[in-house]
Length: 146
Image (cartoon, rainbow, N blue to C red; front, side):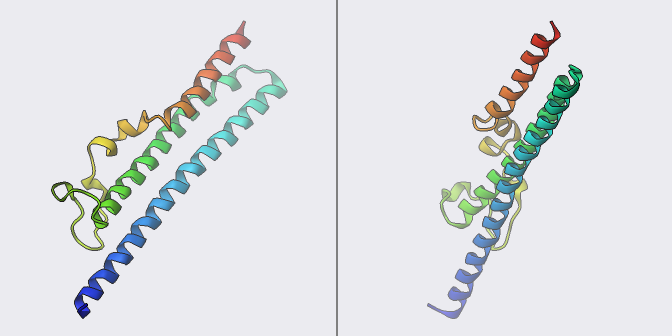
């Protein structure tokens, strides 16, 4: 191999490592958001258990929804960087490649299909977790209200 090919291959390897570290960070953020949401929800339910004020069953519903939106955002970013990773590893068909330069990391190029925010928001791995919690809170509210 020539010196320039070795340098190009070294740069591509570094680029893959950079993108992989961003993917890992987005995944960690998503996991931490779920953990924070569960902690906050548990705090509201503990307060309800101590004073029986039904308001503490209702307040977490918009909070859970907000965490759902944040989680979907981080999962969307993770998907976009996975798209970049596929492009730089030559796993994408030639006509669909969006990331062409070494060290290019522009997630704004990935907008349609699986990278769309609404597709991620209602994705099967995200929706049930938050939807079940919100539905359970609504059911508990109506049961405890009567």
